[in-house]
Image (cartoon, rainbow, N blue to C red; front, side, top):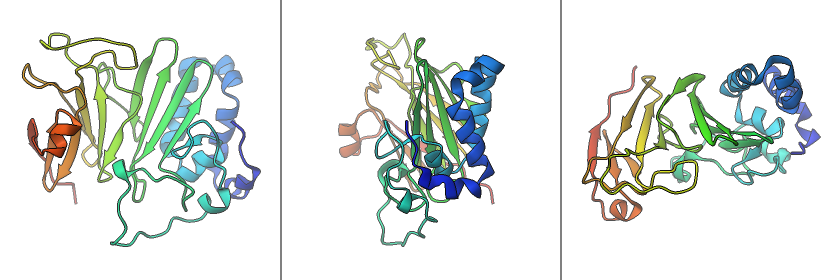
Length: 251
């Protein structure tokens, strides 16, 4: 991806952004020098500390176009505007540019891996980083630099609820009576759901029971509960399979 040099002004005041730019541009040489695992861990650390504008300045694709770098730095490099109470929230908390402060999601692709970053919205306090090995189609996930969902087989994308809960689909149970299989990052037709609570640094994986057919699960934050629907149609009809209490956020 070709980055716009207009971002250089931002990078001069952002050492983390400059380091991210160099590490990302030198991916091949970096892996050769330190090894694949060490390169990945350092990239995850940098992305976990980066701001949306750092990611844009480093040349990552954004919510608007995942396959190319930001084309509107004159807008996206500006300080974020303070949202008014009347403004509607972007679905899944993702900003799409051109927008002050840059987009809410970024994507990078190399020959044998890809990386995706999801900011939590609002003050962008939290970050989810997804690393996908292309050849093995294996995904690893970090939230705020901490590994999450090890062994669950997460999808390479997720979304935030209210800037606090990260929702990610993961592989479903093999013993589900209606389970099926197909191509894709997730091979199970019926999937489970991982919910990470960034306020408490805790995660739980919801596994559908025999009578819960989660082919397109939807999670909605409603007051002090999380409502889990099997499909979009079930959500539209407001027929949840589960209603889970939400722990109060720490003061």
